[in-house]
Length: 248
Image (cartoon, rainbow, N blue to C red; front, top):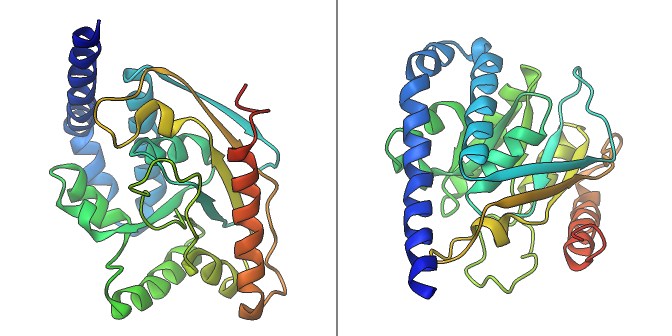
């Protein structure tokens, strides 16, 4: 029985990466076309959403999302969620209704095929470089001026210790939200760690539950409020992850 499980996990994990590559190859002409102009980004975003839905479906995952607030098409947002799995990217693309841009670590740009589009469409940051972190704000400003939203996983990195419920949040997402006076959208991803963590011999197909919490306005706030609003968002997500009510 153990050998059967190990064989399944190996084939299933390999299929995940093959599926990512296969879909990018199939969509390649349209993806290349969609990144020729920044103004065509909404078209790229629609393709990315289709790509994400196909991956989740192809891996046997079913997204079940509970919305406690409604997105407005004319509003930019700061999207934040807990970070536990590579599938967080796909689930975020499925959940969000408005086109957004990821702020993510530059190392992902080295992934074949995926990295080609990642570095041309996302805001890359070298977390060890203060200059790189400062450049993020300018690029985010440009994207917000185009009517796009921004997505940041505020834990920064996936905690190596999977017993950690929620790591401390970095300041970046909250500083940007306050500086640009855009609402913060807290989201809780309940099942991604259980379904597809970074532990190779683990996981299974099934439901991926998520909740979009009420938006937190930043209008009128200053950077003096940054810590309070960061703590508020952390507490919302931590409470949800610690509670069994919704997961059941």
